[in-house]
Length: 333
Image (tube, one colour):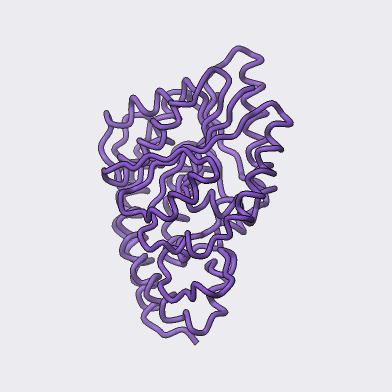
């Protein structure tokens, strides 16, 4: 039986995930998902690279549902690469590795299991087609659905819309590096791990992986697909940042999603503070990704696109930041 290995990073020092996730439901849904993949002759495994600050209670609960966890001391980019390296421990010919952030994968398992299965079936179908033609070079980057994308905070949607547009213009196809979702064949996985550290460092390496693989395979073999109409990749970070949770109350990730949080009167101040913090962080990420795109050596970028990126950096991004700062300075009604 071939393997589908989910590779994830995980960072949850607040322990909110362990407090609010129903692990009986999690185990039930995980069993359902694994059964769906066994029907197409794939065994589903989960390799996790967790930060040292991640609460041990959460790690113990995940190990109890057979997650393969290592704790890794390193920066954000290094931890992401380590998640890919952990997947190598379980990989063999014909396998597929799906990178997706750990909290997003947990959310998909709990609340969108069919969306997750459907997205992976598309990838497995592409892998079968590749193997049938004796091609071992599968790489797929997955875009969020519009509904999933719109669950994010305004600083994220505004800045990622800009970076997505610039990357799509250069690559001449629609891409969404902020989705954090990539599928690799064994050959592709080994290549991106080998090449990652030869490139300049990034705050988050997803845009780098995209360009490395696009540069290796070109437009004929590098694939970008939508994750379907489902909610895989929807925003989950409020779950880990809200410290106003009553542990005795029955809560779930959906209630704490971005759109649902707007309806919680007692969380409005928390929501606004998170958005203000994210404005600073998301601007840094956008600048990092755009400068990397402009200077990258993996994918050809013509003078016209280089000039467009310069204009985005000098004019469009600061204007968006100013508009968001004004909007986020106002209290929520």
